[in-house]
Image 1 (cartoon, helix red, strand yellow):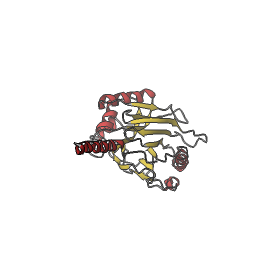
Image 2 (cartoon, rainbow, N blue to C red; image 1 turned 180 degrees about the vertical axis):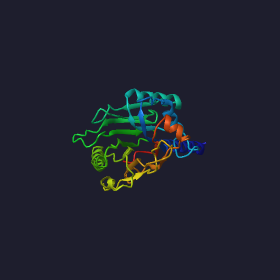
Image 3 (tube, rainbow, N blue to C red; image 1 turned 135 degrees about the vertical axis):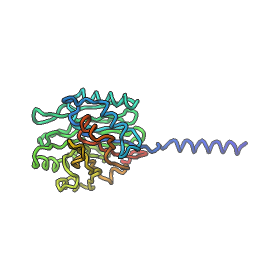
Image 4 (cartoon, rainbow, N blue to C red; image 1 turned 90 degrees about the vertical axis):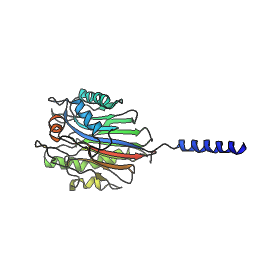
Length: 286
């Protein structure tokens, strides 16, 4: 009888210990230029939701589902509301969102938006970068969030680089290193900073030398063709993720999301393929 009770006590202790450590979990991230969402009949909210939720990953056989989406080129606040509602309807789980005010130097302005599942993502803060020196046509959106299942924190810089002239594009890309460094310095002990967005430049360009030259070194993930021309073919490598591998040790995989029908997608949804990032953690690493 004593041996039986000892076995039960040991078993209970082991169960308690195994339950104390959170199980590992993936955070599934998408970055996507939504092509003037809300403007000039770009209102196929379910099309956006279906692409994000059902075609996450690089092939038709990839596991569906996504946890957080960083969007560029959202034109109106009600466009963000429409996409969030469609995501809830399509996925069967609740979605929330934050959308910025309209940003731009001229009458043409855009918004950034972040969409997230509250059961998977806790939004810690969200704001637009204070571009006091007017270095950016569309100053970035800064989003800090926590992966609910593991407690891992990340800070994302959501940025749509100006297309403009070659000189304007080059200047913005050269200045983004200052934003990255300042955001990281302001994050206290949390060093996991990830730059996402449509950057209007190949990731191998020498223009990125300032960002790559930070310490620890910043590198890119995803440099595939993502823009889609009117012939329904991939054209440019503009959409990337940038981070320091020594800090973002949770990195697991990334790539260009699968698109089932290029022409239907190009005419009915966007001229950019979404890109995805998978982050795996069991706890916060910094």
